[in-house]
Structure formats: structure tokens, C-alpha cells
Image (cartoon, rainbow, N blue to C red; front, side, top):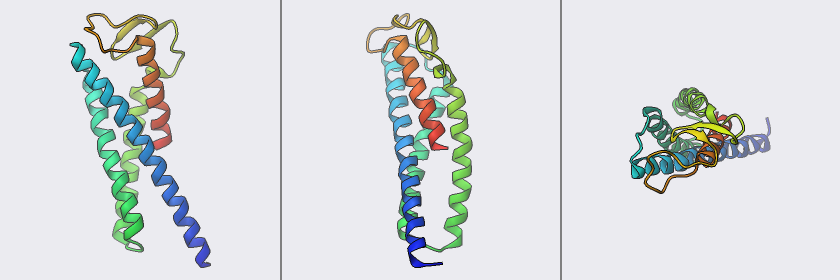
Length: 153
């Protein structure tokens, strides 16, 4: 193999790690907003929202560490094994994230089902004290998280 092939492979790996990092940061940001708005409005927070927040936070940390390992540690079999193990584990985790966000798979018009409640897309959640998105906007958040989690796999 030529030396140019190794540098091109490394560029592809950096691109994939960057894509993984961007996807995990988007899910982390959207779920942080969802967690804060649910807590601020007095609505109950489902357990899966806290779980996805934790998964995306740890996945973001892993994507940063993997990028640094790719840059600083080259050719060590242990780091390659760790990368394969954690990449497989986080692929499984993001399958769960995509499944948990399946409420955003359809159209976000008409009647929607979100963590804020169910109802018409143009309505605000019941019992909300303000600071919460409309149910249609919450459905769009689920759609964004589902599509980005599929990319992160």
C-alpha cells in the first residue's frame, strides 16, 4: 500500500468521527432543551428522556476521545479494539434512541404523541406553565433526533 492510501483512510476516519460528534451533540442539545422545558413547566419527565440524555452525553464524550485517539495514538491494537467495542455499543444505544423517537417518524400535523402529551399539533401541552413548545414543534424535535441518531449509527 502506498503512503497516500493511509492518509486518505485517516481523512475518512476523521470525517466519520466528526459526523458522529455532530450527531451526538445535536441529540444532546435537543434533549437538554426538552429536559429543561419539561422540568420548568411542571410536567413529568419520562425515564427514557433522562436515559437518552445520558446516552448522548456519554456518546459525545466518546466521540471526542475517539477523535483524539485517532489523532494521537496510531497503530496500537488496544485502541483499535476499544474503538470497535465502543462503536458497536454506541450503535446499539443509538438504535434505542431512534426507536424511542419513533413518534416523530410520521407527519407532525394533526394529532401527535410527544413526551409533552398527546393532542393537536397546534396546541400547547396541558398543565404547562409556559416555556414549552407546541406539540407539533415537540414532534419535530423527535423527528430531528430520530434522523440524527440513525446517522450516528
